[in-house]
Length: 399
Image (cartoon, rainbow, N blue to C red):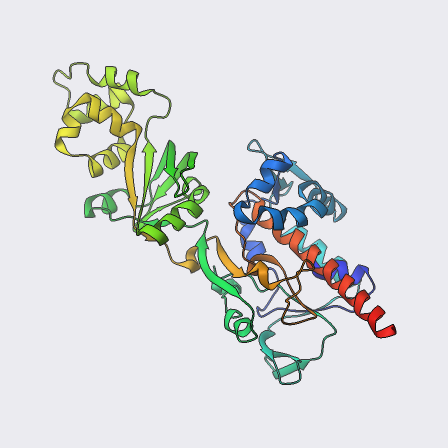
């Protein structure tokens, strides 16, 4: 996005990428269907960025969901809106969009250099790159860093840039997992029998530290280590923050979201006769398989024998999360270059002429097209900031 804006303005643009080919994480994002953006109302969309809604909102005001769809259409990539409001390319994949985009950039004179890993600056302020042919030094008129966060290091976003910027006096917030799974202290039985099993049609709720209620409907996956999946990712940020400050977090699961507590209690109080507890749960509450296993995992014998207590647990089963899964497993990362280190052009205050964009900035968002939309928008914002800075610098030199 930076290269597109700058090349359209007539500047010579060089793109350096550490990987053997560009946009590897973008291609991975499209492996299961490229979710470009979302169609929800602007106010709700911007709210997805939490504490950084003001900063990200400025980018989105210039290049939001509809502008992103129009941009894709101009590349010959039609989009459609799915049933959840998410926006996808007609072909669902990232590769056709990327091919068309790279062709347009190269036609505009943009040069792409693969296998060029940025090493920082030399004593004269030149950019240093490790390349297959040895170290290369580049004297740039201005630079945009778009180095990613710290998740999926094998695709390029390994956070290696953090100490390089900190050494130059740039404030960087610690990189943390976002849209991530969590560790749970499963019993050996549950882990062996149900790891890899989806838990469908549930509702999860969590009271954050500020007292706000977070609720999400959907499904999640039991793993060897704990839980992951769309329902978990949607609540990951407040759960992670709670664990960091208090050492743990409790997520309450409603295993029967279609039944109210009063009805469930009445149904479970019906005589069991010769039915086993498993059959009674299946017939009276629709609880079987992995849901029954979760109930047995956390319920005491007295809970299972008392209809009122059993119904209450089915409606609010406490799932204690121990810790987030490692950063490299996360879909995205929180933390990064602090906005206090940047001016409104996204230029580093301590390094005039150096701008930052994308996931390396200190913001986060849930999955659903919000991450990609803001990354695209931040690239355009940084490029436009650079153009303003270059114009102001040229004007000052003329004076």
